[in-house]
Image 1 (cartoon, rainbow, N blue to C red):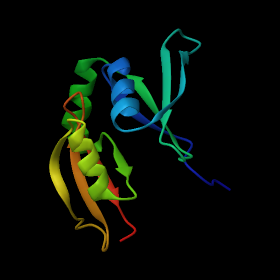
Image 2: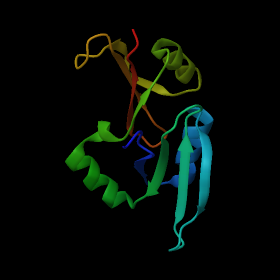
Image 3: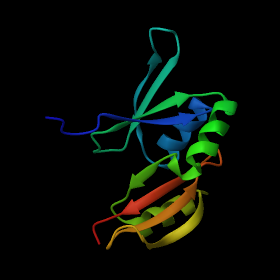
Image 4: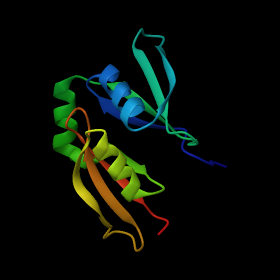
Length: 131
């Protein structure tokens, strides 16, 4: 039986800057930073206490443009928060732009969401579902 997603992939154009943002600003821990069998950099981060890691897959800017054109900018990453208001305030204090303030989520009763702009201009969703 499958019990948990092991890995989610974020496509990035700059792995180093993405690691710095995810670990230094969002609070992830670095799990792996090595070369794969083909000599490409393999990077995984994980939020403290999370079971699922996030792999940062490097792509060329042209590939990222195609991905965004076809899938949209908000497909880049969504992260759960235990306290959306406190998390948003903390990130704002670290200089992160909050593009959508915490508010009720129209797709799930009792859920809330916000949106931030990452270091690379891409949008990330934040969610809180326990209220």
